[in-house]
Amino acid sequence: MEFLTPPPVRRLSGTTGSPGAHSNGNGNGNGNGHGNHKPAFVGLRPRVTPATIAIDRMQVEDLSVDYGRKRAVSEVSLPIRQGEVLALIGPSGCGKTTLLRSLNRLTELTKTATSQGRVTLDGIDTATIEPTALRRRVTMVFQQPNPFPMSVFDNVAYVLREQASRRPKKRVLQGAVEEALARAGLLDEVAADLDHPALRLSGGQQQRLCIARALAANPEVLLLDEPCSALDPRSTQVIEDLIVKLREDVAVVIVTHNLQQASRVADYVAFMYLGELVEYAGAPQLFSAPREQRTKDYVSGAFG
Amino acid sequence: MNMTDALATAPLPPAPRRNASSASWRLTDRLGLAFAWFLGVLFCVITAGLVLYLFVQGIRYLRPSMLVTNPTAGFNENQTGGFFDPLLDTVVIAVMSMAIAVPVGIAIAVWLSEFGRPAALARVVESTIEMLAGTPSILLALFGTLLFEAPWLGFLSRTSGHVVFGRSFFGAAAMLSLLALPLVVSSVRTGLQAIPSHVREASYAVGKTKTTTTRRVLLPAARPSVLTGSMLGLGRVIGDTAIVLLLLGNTPTNDPSGSLPILSFLRGTGSTLTSYVFYNAPTGDGDQPGKAYAAAFVLLLMMLALNVGVDIVGRRGRELRWNS
Image 1: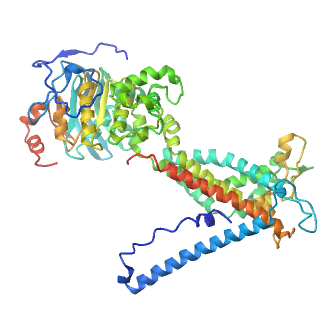
Image 2: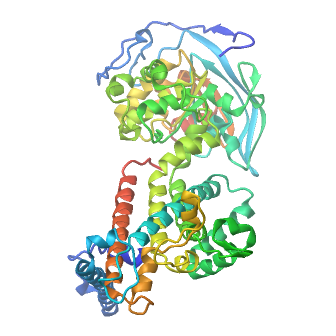
Image 3: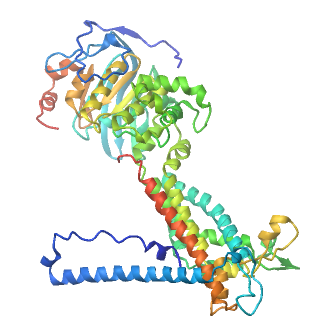
């Protein structure tokens, strides 16, 4: 992907950058490529080490989305950066999924949806980008694992091929497919059965295949819509570790209902309530010292 | 013998839990249960009796030579030959009809399920398909005879001077495909609608268009439904008599028209197993009941094979699914 102007690179202040001790208790053996950035678990509140760099990727500016007359997202502005994981939290129906879906214009598939405001990707208004091109740069993983009814290999190759084409051929794509599977930490488990139907994988493997699929397009932003809510705790941990590793290469936005999860993986957290962005802050601050009363109530479990 | 009768041989639903003894039920409920059981068993007995009777008669009268000899005129069973041409024509007619019904049916189902705009047109198409499903085949046959006698369709059948005969494989297959169409459409549509919307969105979310998604994700996922619908449709086509009688000419053997090798065959007339049975039944012109039983037995075997096929395909389709 080429940019008209190089995206601004910004050093974060106050990062220690020192890798903490990673209590990798369940011994998941895959993908240790980013050993320096393993999450450091501190006390009861596991926290990840902040990434050392942050690159501005997307900018949401006064975005409002309506479904018919109902306002789902109301004048939200926030930045999305590579090198950081942004978590969107809030009670059901607060517009966090709508906000996520409007980042790659998936909301347009809903007939009644209209939106105002602007979302930019690397400085370019997403409204001016062809939707299919935009969605290859801002890919998404869904709540339910949804591999396509084809082989593991073809699931990833489908993304790499031009629309419905069956080309390039398999052996040409082998490297790219394996790379995407490796980035999703799945290659070791499925290397022997790339030709097996993807729907025969376990739920956690299916979800990582979906992540591999989303990564195969080599996107700048990865959107995750409650990616772990259908998974068991162990698969959840594998995917959370993966998310933290991925933020170096791609901006990650995750919608989650699980506050512990948000505190485990996110660098920044946006708390939404009734379509409004109530508070956007660094994860430690938002969870330990929220500025807004509503955030405090939600984080401490008063509602939601 | 049609598909619905054959389907009724499927196993009974599981019996109500015995330990939740129906003895504690109200009398009317117990009577109702007994009546339901009686009807269910009665239905099975009737169907089983029918199938068994045809089996016994079929095995009694069917000779392997009948499968390779053609019907001839004669006064007794030894002279009237077999039913090679009707058997061949059944296969030809089935292939032709499905060649029309399956692609058209899939196209309509995809349009209804995935696009469906303008909504008013979709509703019209939907009720048209429903109406077609409920149309007696004799009405389609009658309409077909009028349609294919039209001068501009003369190239599809035998003509003499300005008179278009209007009976041919083309006409019969076209009308028979209308019988299969609603079954294909409704099955494919159900299959497509059973695919959760997040699967479609997952394809859009990696930059694929709706057309690509339909071709590469949705139709492969709906393949068991496509096969089930096709087999149900095939059953209707093979089992139909009215359209064949009126539109295939009902000549005991094939009667080609013209000189081009395959086209002459398809422009000509013939008969299928159903019309052969009709002709040879005790009430028919041929009145060779033994031949009718033998042909009916072959027809029954084809139907049973189709039913088993539908069952296997349907079972396999349930294996790999997403959570909704």
